[in-house]
Length: 355
Image (cartoon, rainbow, N blue to C red; front, side):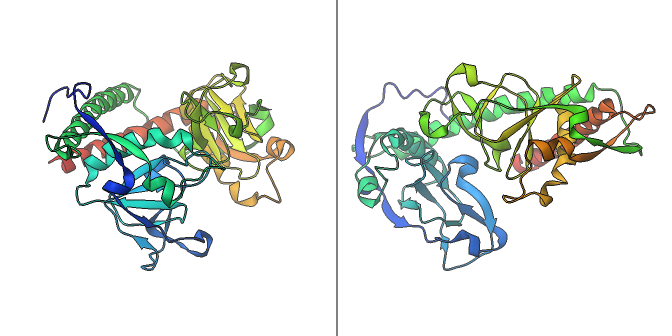
């Protein structure tokens, strides 16, 4: 392992992607025809390492792993890329690059470099095979003037080791903080139905049109109708007068009725309802209530949306105290206990996998 490897003093050279990779097309043009399963489906996003859902295995559609998936369409992700270690089903908006010198570490390095080309692509200038093969990327080179695989591997290894060290420090502190809470048993609680308007102030904030925002200005969360990553579609910078600065809150989009807790400032797209409790509460209380709201999601659809009128009248079942009002302290400690258990299991898993 190299310590504090710097890239500033290295020799770099521009390479055409077509010269260092064999390019293939992915094969899935109609994902709606395939049922749910265990094979990752990679589409036009670099979130979750490109995975949008999991599908039933279909050998005719499988793309072998150990490749770089180049995103060739969709405004927000076109020009970006992800390294795929495992086999997957890829959208036809994805092309993959293969090389005998590719592995997890060199793949991570090259995708980071290649993503700097993303700004030149848009709906009018697509990343077709010709454009992709003629993209130039700068890579460090060895004495033979070839891409320095060894250096790229060591650089990513060092970065991951540093990030993992910081994460372990954070999660250990988080665990200590949770353990300091008062001991709490999960008791049988009386429950009562409440309408949303009784508990929440509801607003639809000033919407931001994502098509008018430079996607490279990554800074503040942009909440849309995307049902993953806690509704976060991208990170942007924009007019601060349109920034929602109240948190924690629950966001819920009209046409999907999927609630998520937001614990930071954010911008929103259209039709995103923002629910703020009328009393001061932590994110853990919001997480509990979001789960109760989620149980009613199935009755809403694009033809029967959870508009503001329906949302206000939506009933949810919550635990109550002796005064028959919502027991927010119980909800908070319930979710903290769940988080504590999850962190303990994760650390046990990491301890086993590291050994």
